[in-house]
Image (cartoon, rainbow, N blue to C red; front, top):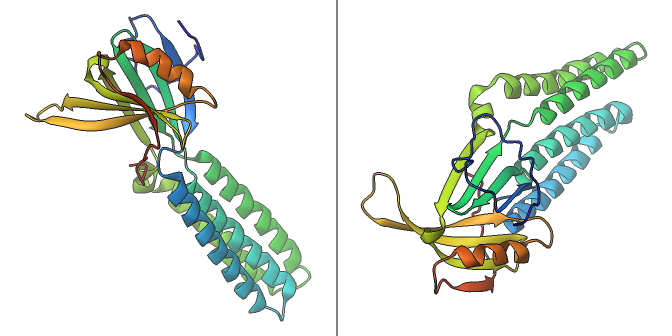
Length: 249
C-alpha cells in the first residue's frame, strides 16, 4: 500500500515475527524515546555548570595560561562529550505494519564513536604535551594528568561489561490490531500514539499501556490514516499532546 523504506537493517538479535505476511508499511528511524524537554533542561543546566567550572579551573592556573588553557580544554571536551551521550542518546526503531498488526524493533548499540573520540583525543594531546615538554619540562605533568586521565576513561568504557550492557538494548514489540483502544496524533512530537489493552504472559489481569510510534517529519498524519481502518469499530481517533517516559529504560 505504502512504501517508505523497504530495506530495514535489523541487528541479528531481532527478527520480524510476521515476515511471511504482506507489508503494508515499514520504515526505520532514530529517535529520542524519552521526555526531551526534561532532558534538554538537564543538558543546559549541566552545560552551564561545566562552563563555569572550566572558567574557574582556568583562572586558578593564571600563572601558566598555556598549560591551564590546555587542561581546561581537555576537561571541557571530555565532560561535554559525556553529557551529550547521556542527555541526547537515541534509540533505533524499525516499524513494520502487516494485516496482523504492528511490529516494532528497537535497539541501542554501544556508542563506539565515543571510544574512537577518546582514543584520538588521548593520542593527540599526549603528542602535544610531549612536544611542549621539550620546551618546558612542566608539561610532562600535563601529559600524565590530561591524556592519562582520558586513557583511563577510555579503558573503563571499553572493557567494563556493566557499562556496555547499560548502553546496549534490544526489544521486539508485537501488537495485534484488535488490542488497540485509542489512536492519537501527537501535537508535541513527530509521533503517533496507540493505547492498547492486553493480558501479559503469566498474568491473569488486563494491562493498559501505550506504544509510541516515532515518525519522520510530516508523516504522522499519513501513518495514522493508514492505521485507522484496521482498528476495531468505535476506537477513538484524536489529536493530543502525548507524554513520553522520562527515561529510555
